[in-house]
Length: 632
Image (cartoon, rainbow, N blue to C red; front, side, top):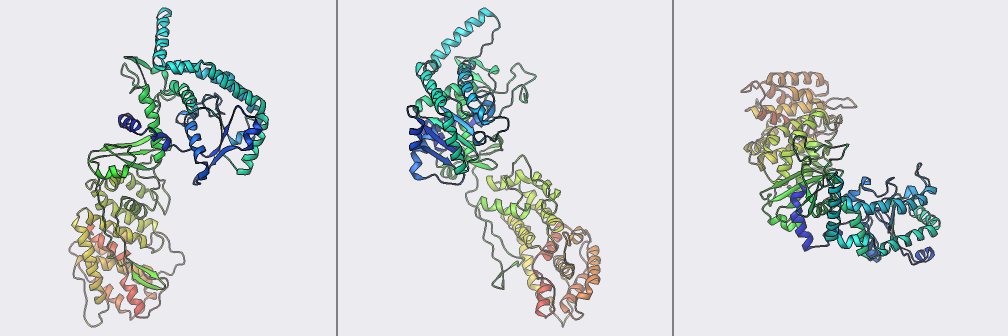
């Protein structure tokens, strides 16, 4: 996947060489710049250091020194931030050259049980005398020596020498130069003379500033020196395993280290039935670009999906490119920075989004003790749409996007197993609809799964009769139905509005005989009546799923019977002369539905009646009856 992006990333790097460092962030910690030609006292008389903390801006006066640290930190940090790539075999020091020292503050403060403070300097000596020389000679491991024959091996070694002289002559010259030897010797002499004093100073700075992460020391040297040290470190480690390296037309090819497991412990991608064991090989140059590309992607953010313009994915003005680009690339990184979702989309996403939420359930809000029918702003962005679906359908459990490998865990009364199952089945369709702008795959979700989610909320996540959030989910579902062209959505909204108007008159009628005129009117009124009767419960702690028995009913006669039972249960709380409830009961019990089984269309009206504004409670308040609790 990354290999496909390498050519375009290389083009952008050639055009904007600062792309990597401009997007490079220093990790949290304290960064110190020291000069080898100064004493420790002189270095700390006017110390050059900066402390990096999350969500804290660095002082503008330190802008230049931060830039200096960024460049040298980039050239001195572990490949892919993996301690498996450390020069230090014990993984205590995380720097990659002799001009730096990267160590965790807990080691400096003596909080590492197996590595006391007294062991730091001896280990540092070993780092210079043992680990760094071996790391330098490891550069030549990049070249594949395959022969086991002594004579042939001699020829290959000579070829290797010619190769490095031709391809990396300047680097090899620096590796064995007096300049490098003297530089490292000065660094060792500095630590030998001042390490104990330095340790005390740093410990005091850690205490005063409460630093609990990295301490990073940089000796002053030209950027070119740091770049060469970086090449000495990174070239023999840029491939996953050097055993698979091959020489092809004067170029070394190998298995990229990023996102591929082929080591002895985890050879998951090894090809067992082919002569070539590895799934892919890239050149050294491509591997280096892949490394920078993976770092650039990490800077965009983990645990979320992001969209790149198809023709120019790394453009600095990405939003402008996305608006005019005919295609796009959709990606997501996991916690390790590995790609867990990648798709190239050949068509353009929708340019405008407008989903209007019509409050046909007459959901009310309070303002200074005044109630009014709530107005919902239209949804006009993918971000709004995602957050609305997350909040109203999945109870805010989609914190890390749709393609997180760790799916949200089941939690009783908040995120039931049924909700989790629907999420797993529908997440690709939801992503396609929200971020790609396609309507085809979302239809089953809107038609079936969204209704099931509303039913799950009524039965399992709504405590007592608190259905406001569920009602808003119902409004969103209807709005989505209308948005993708389902006529049922418009009919449901228009019919429900008409039923509110018609029933508000019928239920108060004391002169004439009133009756239901249609199946939608019967089911809507049955839902209203069911909510009203359950509202009469005087239980102090109203449990989850109070309305679940109504949701489980499949036949009209069962629904009538259940409402009759509820009426008998709570009849003591209903005044004998309450005409509105009498009319509602007679209308429901006296109506004969066109079909006995409750179909999906009529279930929508039952839902609407149950969770929408309740006309019986409103009428009751106007007639002066006292009810415990608050009407919807």
